Length: 489
Ligand SMILES: *[C@@H]1O[C@H](CO)[C@@H](O)[C@H](O)[C@H]1NC(C)=O
Ligand SMILES: *[C@@H]1O[C@H](CO)[C@@H](O)[C@H](O)[C@H]1NC(C)=O
Ligand SMILES: *[C@@H]1O[C@H](CO)[C@@H](O)[C@H](O)[C@H]1NC(C)=O
Image (cartoon, rainbow, N blue to C red; front, top):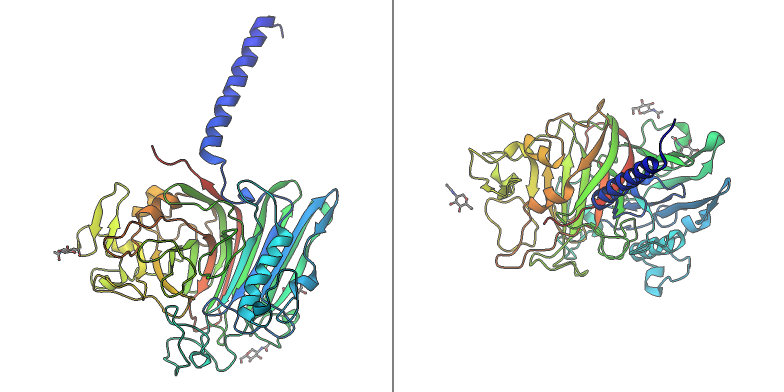
């Protein structure tokens, strides 16, 4: 080809301009991530495990398992994985020392777990701006509550043992146990594939190598091809009669401060905390088995903590309130909110055009968009009728806004129809979580300055909420990212 010298020059200049123009607009819009590993693409994985009892504590450790915190963190160096956490460190449990352990935590399983998480975080920490980060967090929770144990406070207030109410599952003494946990440390396999995982059961004494018939089970396996694509996290959770209420999530938690559901220091993946309305969440989800009609599968769950007067949480469990908002995509999850059941609806809905619609406005309120709304048990100025959130399942009072697919959410990129994103419909989502969560109702005392809606955990997974038969949920998650967007002009 024959092109004059100056033509070539102008073509190059033009191409350079196009390149700069397109890359800067992409950067401005898309490339500022709140998480340490945007899109789960980093070969050197950081993943950790935490297990919680009914009120997000430990209670007592499972025999020989240590404290229910573990991590799998490594860097890829030439053609080997350099691990940062040993199995001995993963098995650390009450009474065993580690650097930084405080004397008061040494003998207390709840405090020990919180400090072990910080220790594992220090081993996994990756330097970054504006803050170092630690790991994705696999969170497993056992919903059994033994009311005779005296283990869980009521809206943050210590209460003694009380007789069973019939509301909470428990097969008897010991039902709030921590699980058996097994770890397959990540390995570099043939063909440049890396793979590792955690699995286990709540049935102490069971041998999971003999299969998972008749026992509870959980598993998270991660896989990635070196140098390309995303880590793919494959999850499985199985309930049984003895363990009918189990939760399994993969979370991006704050790297410091209180994370959703915590009242102690956390470690995690979010080096910058996203604030409504200025963030989006991207993820690829493939639901393979749903977990039955009681499986509240969260396409996304965001959690945070602020007080009823709008102030940030400070660890005072009597006035701190955990706030959660969840999009449940199991099409078998009904909208409990309805014109004849207003107590399950938030007092009002705000449209994308910022119009407020009261729940008594039966002609306009989108009842079908809300599964359930419940108010914090320590709120003093509630609008009747109300449904109060469960007072025992968090270390402090909580508030829940649970939504289901509905046309009203389409504008935010959320599912607009039941069945979207469910079994047989794997999708990559780009959710305007910031926009949506800026318009959800959350309780505040009248006349107080609006709380900053800064989120400390973003997670995906399911809560099988008391099944009457053994149920299995199975799904994969990849490409997870929390993207910071510029404030609207
Ligand atoms: C759980 O993991 C262990 C250790 O990696 C493995 O031996 C076992 O086969 C796994 N169990 C199941 C049921 O997959
Ligand atoms: C599982 O439980 C059922 C009913 O109790 C029993 O018939 C069956 O033998 C059990 N299977 C295993 C593998 O333990
Ligand atoms: C509907 O609820 C709002 C807010 O609670 C109240 O101000 C209004 O009077 C109610 N309207 C009707 C018709 O009950």
